[in-house]
Amino acid sequence: MNKLSPQAVIFDLGSTLVDFPVTNWETVSRECSLAGYRHLFESGCKLPSESEFLVGFEKIRAVFRQQATDSHREWTVVEAAQSFLVELGLPTDNGLADKFFDSFYVELEKHLSLYDDTIEVLTRIRSRFPKVGLISNTIFPEKVHHHEFKRFGLKPFFDFTIFSSTFGLRKPHPSIFNEAARLAGFPAGDCVYIGDRYLEDAQGSSGAGMQSILKVIPERDYPPDIPQSLRKITDLSDLSVHLDI
Image (cartoon, rainbow, N blue to C red; front, top):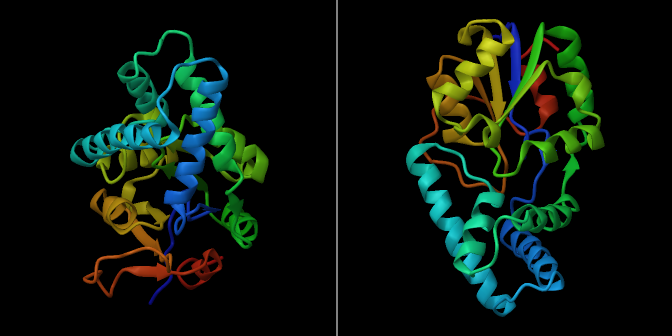
């Protein structure tokens, strides 16, 4: 397979550059929600039991997730928390949803780490290609990802970043890929996109005219009919098979 010669290399974030809790997300999500619950409780809010709160909050999030799947319009944990506070009869004009999320995210942050080869590969990419960018589907406010960039030393490697929570639409909607190509300053066909999800990343980017590379995560379920012609990697360092780095 010939190596690609793009003008811009664009990455996904979670599970591509940063190790995100895939296998134990249900447990981690529960811990994060409980951290938010405890903040509300300690703030004097009248709340149901922990178990009732968790069930109710998950129901709200399921509605938001389904709407996002149907429309590709992004949602955030803050929005879901705001809706749940209304359902619980709690005030929503005092920043309580944001404070809930802050506690939620502090717990989540403990589970995030860089892959061992992320910095090495980004260093090679940065020195080799004119533009490097990022598109991330995220249900978190953009500010926390800027914090992650600072924490992990990622900022110097990127010319631009797009987070779906700010952009408003999520992958695989073509608009978010078109915006990345615009920011890169090159046609979509001159861009390569690397991500770990088949529908959102591989199909989404190729549908927008980009060249695609799928980072295969062993713990993730993928469709059995993925084309054999799709370029795949298991580690970022495998990009040397597909790109001249």
